[in-house]
Image (cartoon, rainbow, N blue to C red; front, side, top):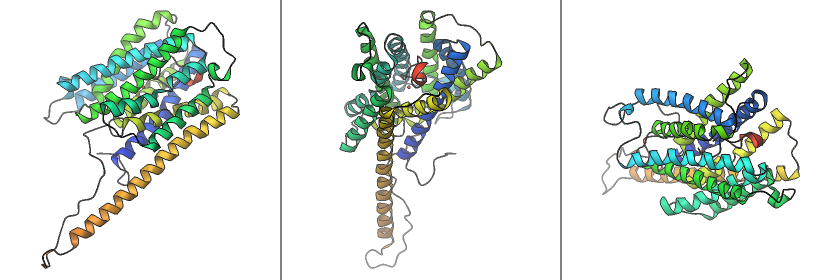
Length: 369
């Protein structure tokens, strides 16, 4: 049974879920920071824990769910044919993005790293045009630019606002840009996967496998892994796993339903929610540039919402006109018409990026999930 409200189009519903996932990513980032600060747990260890947790749930889901032929998805957990390539690439690029983001966060000032990793909406609309033939509208460009500029004001990178060190390695900036490219590519792959019938669980299993693999690879470079020292740290770890897995599911599900360009803009709002948790939990004091950034990012979301409302109203008008036209007698015959089809505006599919910034301090899981 679908949870989609009848008054929302499939595309709008997808964007709503992406917005919720962005909030969840920010909350998961808060748990990561708490577990790291109070428990000393490396972020790679938390990625490993979440990968195992998520992988277990996904395997159960694959066993319970069946495809159109009635076969359990566990028989082909990574899809079949061309779909399998998309699933594997989604996992590989997600893992590579994690490594790139990890290195970027390790060697650059925090604001610089966050800014570079927030450039992916611009990359996404370009890639979506090339690989998905998505139309680039003036409004889409405007909200994308507003979102990226807002992220810059919130993160306040040293290469714009000053105060940085001159010996920052150039490789850090290169890996940050490549990390944005990875997340943009992931959103394109998710959208493409939705068009060929890939199940959400198959995408999630791919990330779980490569997330675990890459966390093991770069774990030794971050520090020694240890078990949580007390019940509070265990609860923080559980929060990372459960909230992060929920956010990841919604992004991979909803990313199949809406254009990749708009998904990237809504997904990028996680920096606002992350900063909200910074203020509420870690008593971070915002400045005037922070508020400017918040207004720009939220303004881009409002603009997308207004566009979707207008599209919905236009769809309703067309539906009414079509319905009335079908009720008119043809050929002078008083023949009743029972065509009650409605205009949907979108083609329905069969279903359906590391935690945000790790809350401006603990983020090494990366955005490129």
